[in-house]
Length: 177
Image (tube, rainbow, N blue to C red; front, side, top):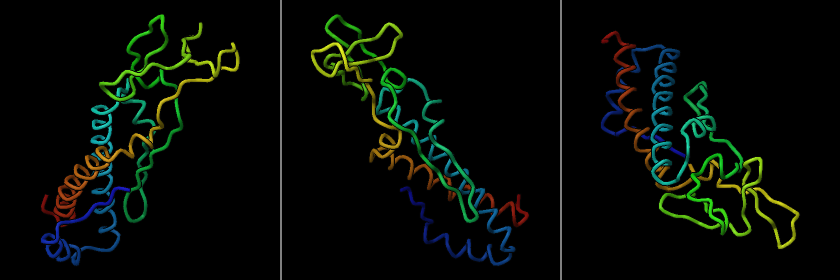
């Protein structure tokens, strides 16, 4: 869970400004600032993911992360199941010896008994027999976002943007901008 905290020196300034506003307006100010912070945190998270994992497209990551407005802020949900390795991860090489998949950047792992079917789907045999077949999957999106480096990047960027946008939205609400 990513938590955002305000700088303690800024609390008194914000409290003075909030006393002059109506309750509904304060809620909208906080919502706008938190939505922008969540969007920035999502962007920082996807950039950190691309630095760690060999993901093919950002659209795949963005489709699994939704940002919803709540009464008192914003909620960011990360959802997604295990998906086929070919969809998300770069295939280093298709050698005669088998399928080599790179999930994290800089690593290449051979999938034992792995092959590419005629339809282009990555499969592997569970034993020496022809059947049963099993799909090759990479980590789930929530699992990748759970990486400590990714979480730290999201929290840092989101917090900076939240403070910046909160001041901006308060200025706007008070008629300064």
